[in-house]
Length: 108
Length: 108
Length: 108
Ligand code: NI
Ligand code: NI
Ligand code: NI
Image (tube, rainbow over all chains, first blue to last red; front, side, top):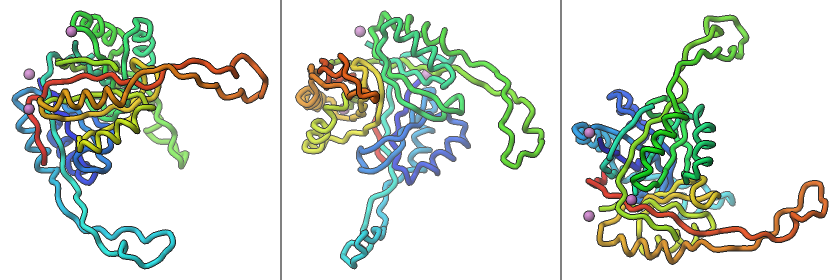
């Protein structure tokens, strides 16, 4: 048994969640902040048998890819025209994953 | 030292918390979602000496038991009488527990 | 690679966060409750190379120190003068840290 701890950027959460559901992989989630991609993310705790770890990593890799995107920042409250209203490049998506050893697993 | 990571279904949280307090077992908690029992749950991080792991597992097992319960779904906003107003069986309670090895422990 | 799991009392969070930023140490954070210091705290997940673990522990130790502080409890709603309006000693600050082994680390 391993614990897959995956910190997933929020843009990739819906795709990952739907894929985990489809594969009947049980995942506990919690909202987190910060990390590699400085933004809102969701952390998944996924307990899996050793032999399914590569499959879970493949699913995360397929659903979560860090990529560049152009976004137009919201117009400032003052409503003035500024450089800020031009699209800027931001990094979205992606995941940081740690696989941890587990001594024992119990379900009550 | 071990880290006991326990995902506890919300119905069993009060009983478990009161038992942990009684036994002076220090537990850090955070609200989580999803997992084995698809519902709101609380995840506990409990750092304990190796020799107390069986005791902590016994406490969790005694407080957290997955069981069936009949609940009457709330009447729909439209107020119409439907099949939904009959009691339905749901799974409540229970916990999923992973015991993780710890290299070192520090308190500052 | 190790996972440093640090439960930090809320008073010490700003100092720790600023030091982690300065040292470009990537940390994922989540609000937690309870634990050694019965109060609001923040849990950090910090993935680091084995050789940087002592550095991370030094940073946490320098920023997070459990200490006594005198606080004046808020005056009760009734506004009556009572013993409660005298300063009381409370424990603030501090951190509980566990270093966990990591089998593998991935970034997508
Ligand atoms: Ni196994
Ligand atoms: Ni020990
Ligand atoms: Ni390493």
